[in-house]
Image (cartoon, rainbow, N blue to C red):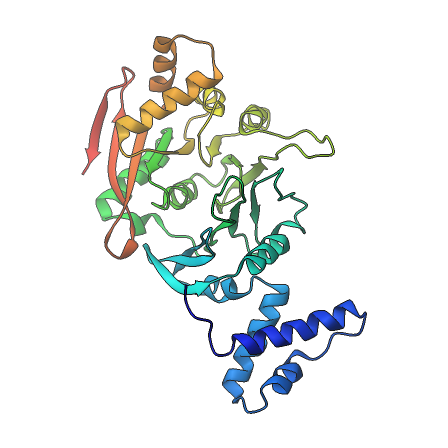
Length: 356
């Protein structure tokens, strides 16, 4: 465990005084003055830093705020023991920050209470969004054996163009795929850039196209067209019915889509999606976790079989007819997301690699 910084005691003392003021019903004191009271010899730069740290610990995400402000950080990960790691430019690295359990619990409470999402032993897993759009996943004991786990996927305001994913040959192929209204499955590992590539490809669709986007947590930022966004909602404790991914795929068909974008297929909703593609909603997109084109098709077939009653042969025929192109992604040097393969799927399920 890393040793506390020399200023940790000052931060803790100021926080205690802030909490005491609030508990006594007194007006909030001036944070800067409290810091000076505890450490009158601080220089201006250190004073500014401590003031920001205290405010962040009381109203923000504490030490995580500084990590999330780093433009090269895509993920901030708090492990069960409280040690904090980041994904910076495609590489996982320790930060040297270790959060005590009360701090982690306070951050979780601060994130999920305003969202109205219960997080406790009865609800040990939850997903949510930070105000800026970053996605947060929390897992609590007893599911996480060593303590609460937090994973924050930082929302990138700047979207990458198609050219960022490979050489001109890739751009030309994928641009043609969009123009020809092929149905596309993008596959790859976690963090390989699947959602980012779908965003870049879907943004090339015709400006009059109506896109219905279905996600469990909003990540896609498609620009330029009519975009209707649908979001999965779990059922609530007060009896409000939830809306599953499969529900929303069926709902999307009644909204007159030109293209359907499913953020990630991982369950029986694949049955409805494949049926939608087979009924003429060409030019649609989705993603799946897989390590190869063959693996992506196999996983899609498995998911379709979870939501339908057809035989294995029927499911295979449906999927093979619905998917035109599968695109694989990998992490390149420096963490850059790159298109690894582009393959066409025949009606008989054959896979013909067209790139590289």
